[in-house]
Length: 137
Image (tube, rainbow, N blue to C red; front, side):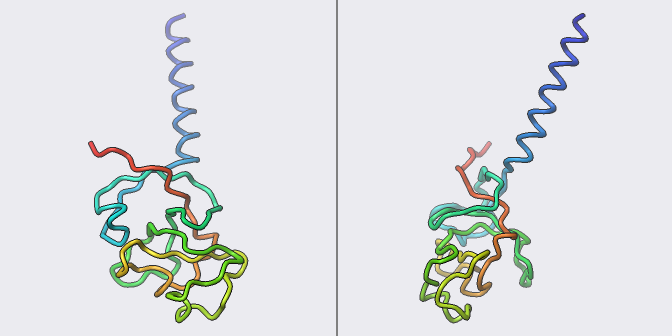
């Protein structure tokens, strides 16, 4: 009888872990592009999803990584579909308004690799939205 309860509890724990991994992930910030908000080494809890709003901090995949750039970046959303393209990004984007299916990101640090160099970010590249910073161990 005890082994049945232990097995059932183990199964429930495994299912909860799988469900959480499908909905969230923890990433570690590398670099200083989001300083002073986040520092290199900070860990962030990310809610997976394909929607974001202006002002959200998001994680997205870089389709064409530049040399020495990581495959995923953490940036702040500066504009979403239908919003005007920020002045700082206009040289990299051939539009005055963010087209459907795209968004614009800017790092909190002005020397950040963001939409000023990457251009529009497709919504399909979005991994998720940062919900909070996770304490360091």
